[in-house]
Length: 213
Image (cartoon, rainbow, N blue to C red):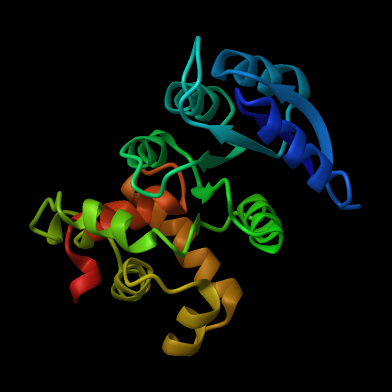
């Protein structure tokens, strides 16, 4: 797994670098101190994942994420933030980030977030997930049939469970489907609704009130 670390604080960059160098399945291919450098690293190194700080000089993490996901949609972005109440987090998710992680998260949680995000999962730091979901649900765009009418009955069932926060394994057990079938349904839903990834799909579903069904 090729990773770029982007943060304007030396101590954070150095700490993450030391942590990740201990992992045999992770290769650090670039270190950036601002968003503009991260965009350049994305072009030069084609990483699998970028750990992205939010508030940085020259170019902030939200704009860098937006540019990277527009130019290189395959690259995953995991946002690093100091405060769980940071209002920039939701903007970063909307820009295409696959999730966010607090900088003081335990070592095991950092590695779990990185590996999960690289595999295509959505990661939201457990300590502040509730606030993010509250902010998203506070901007609902009803009626829900704007999106549900485009999907099959089974796809709607999968989407509702996604909006409730379930992962693929939980959805497969609830609907008596294989995990492969669940993944195929999610890919189909993403295509039909014109969103970029699973994170954006979940946000859309919550905004339309599907998590309450």
